[in-house]
Length: 430
Ligand code: NAD
Image 1 (tube, rainbow, N blue to C red):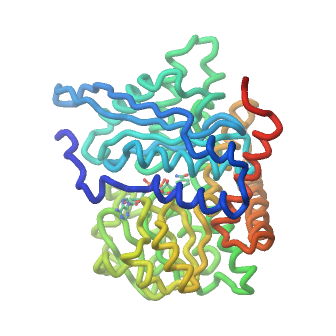
Image 2 (image 1 turned 90 degrees about the vertical axis):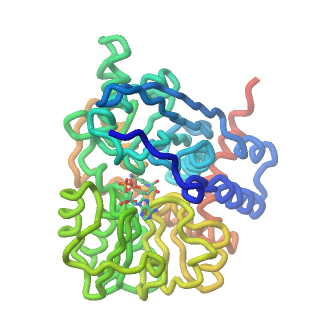
């Protein structure tokens, strides 16, 4: 197997840190955030970079680079995903960690924000190599993660299997007496390794819960609405699954390999079977024609769901978006210029820290289930996720009215108020 090639420069620089800081500064101005708290939240608490060697299948040794950025833990342990992608770097890990702090605060969870990953194209490695990379990365992170310190979860190109390897490696390096007390060092595990029924679909379920609430406020129904999804992985597939159940029609999908479009409708279940059998890619799907990827976001539709990487809706394509709403399943899919264009054109945005919060809420319940040594049923779990997403949604709407702000700014204000209150009440050590 070939070692990873260097990523292309344009793909390499995601530039998401600037976007999250623009959003933060703007919301902090509107609400008049305490200047001291503002200084604290503008910095990350710690940034861990590890280089670790792994023996590949052909006997050669490759050295990989992994990251874990811990932004803030005022409300609880750091929480956030691990991404395996060639664009992973300090800038993207920082930005994604900061978004996690806002997201957990907005959802009212006892967590802070962290994020990380490995700079790698996982498609270039065998399953055995990925297992060794994951285990060695976990070992390199050492006691920088932990069930009450920093709890990773799946993100782009990481999945329940990878979470199981992390949990097993972490607990295997601790005393056997504490093995099962360490299971919740990571969430998004498979069911047999301490996972939670429903965590797999939690993010997509939450995306659709926010879309239902959006439609209700508009006096509209999702039934018959046409939607397009960028990214057909965990978030993209489950969003399409639940939106189709509401009677909406999937008309186009784009992933890293291809773009397909069929105005008559694409069956997400059938497409998902193809993806599962086809190395997680929509390429060569026989039942829908391909189209020019550049025209994807400009397709005539009602709902756009970006569910892939950051900075996908930009000045280059935002003006062509004809949809009524962008539901941000991905983290940071819309950059500052793209957002200004969408707003000027009257396109609603359900902001990422609200829209995709079902995932971290599901992770919270997995963590609690492990801590309590309980096993919960899927209906209970989805009901609890629905409650928390809707509580956050109502707070965002009410705060938007209070400040005459858009939903992105009001989502930030709800989160920042919670963090500000915590710092005011507990003070700063020493
Ligand atoms: P995934 O790895 O399961 O799927 C990612 C999808 O994006 C794949 O279909 C891939 O082909 C596609 N993709 C990658 N590069 C692309 C490109 N340049 N253009 C078009 N498509 C591209 O990842 P996921 O877990 O579904 O995460 C997707 C997004 O949702 C990320 O932004 C992630 O941070 C966010 N998110 C995930 C969760 C979760 O629970 N997994 C929770 C909240 C937010």
